[in-house]
Image 1: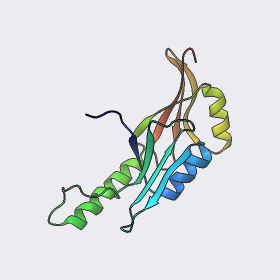
Image 2: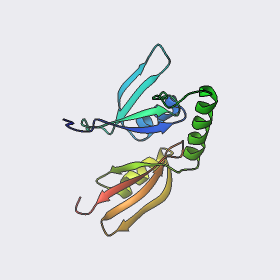
Image 3: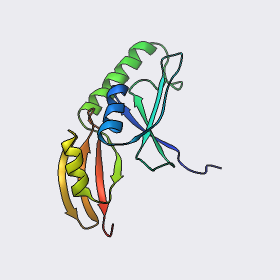
Image 4: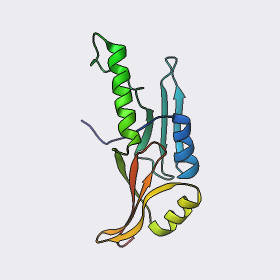
Length: 148
């Protein structure tokens, strides 16, 4: 029986740059950073104080083929990686929402650290929201629920 979700994945183009962004700019904790003999790197982070779910920052194309490739495997893999990297750079992926107790204050703090925002904080019927973009094109809602 599945008991809980432990990890979610955000695809990135450069894991060192991702580590810098999520740890140094957003203030997340580094949870794991291991490299295997085959070159695969397992890099996970989480907001400080969050222990139940980690975010795996995986390099596009590093996850293996899971049996989908045959014939021209190298050509297929390169085309798939290029296609995903292109969509990532275009901002086609929303990787989720981060919650904060004070959206406007957090916006100012992150903006001062050079974090790019797609939208500034605005009031919604359910709370306050702003939209963050990481260096690769992933975007996230940063939300302050009503009554927080």
